[in-house]
Length: 256
Image (cartoon, rainbow, N blue to C red):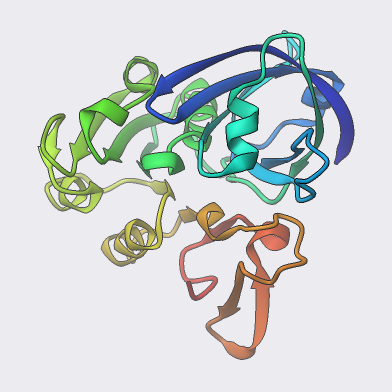
């Protein structure tokens, strides 16, 4: 982990309240595991807590990384008003991300995401495809208006969509997509809300490699608030912190 003043290269609104922010700096050289996150300070004296935001992708040859975030409060609203050339105080990369070393060319991986849980899955998919793994994406959103990175995921592999109102793909949630899927993967990677993760855990209990990102549980991102504490199945007195020990865990490793 390093701390650095990173410079904004560009920023754009991808969908209502959803922003893509590209940063450059030496810290990018430390990024080598999809699913990790950055801890970003809001450059306002009255907003003291850093914001944990997952890394969407990184390009070490260009020295850039990208985050995608949703405006939820004063901190992220301030980020959305920043421009190219502005700087942000960034710590990272943090957390334990997705492990892909056990997958080989010809294997099939299901990549499952919902809403603002989709961003970290993009770098994951790129790295899996580079290994020769067949990636199949199952992505869920509220409505077509808030869909983002559709073309980017489709360029990497088969991509299926669900929306709550049926304006893109099937009507319903990602679970409906997975229930209609007859193929069995060699691995499953998922990021989204608790309902999505529990569905994945239940549907693919027979798959040995199922990795779940619990990043939605994180609050302060530094282990101080205890909001992301999860217990482990074998010992109810033992707990882990998503921001320190995760955010990615094997299915069944923690109770959430």
